[in-house]
Image (cartoon, rainbow, N blue to C red; front, side, top):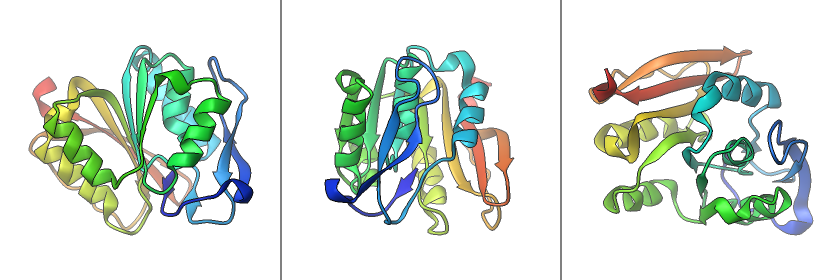
Length: 201
């Protein structure tokens, strides 16, 4: 879920839910009436069906995390840890981590996503699954890909970067260090692209 603005507790509503696992059925809080775009349940369910066993024990990074829906879904399904980066909605993510009883395995950084990525790279952190769902039509999806192109080791050798982006009007680049291994389109608006390090070949 990409996001741009803070929400306050008195402007919250229930958004998407956790689909499966330990927190199955838990409804997540979302900022009411602000510029957020939740990942639809059907898209999320399809995503996790594709990932299958890759989720169990994974180290997860959820950037432009919004409500934290994707990272929390991964934790519910057995991921080891999840780090959430979203300057706008850190309080919402924290509340949802408490609601799902998954807070003990979460780390939330309320800073600009690209500053967080730079710090994680500098400290040689590494993740098995990276969920990136930036706001559409702002070239942020391309910025994410360009960052990882120059910081490939942020993703584990067998890891996956999953990018949610607009289905039309975005030309995905050919990269030297990453290859797009799958693309899935959902309706007229949303597409998921799956990227892994070329070194894995």
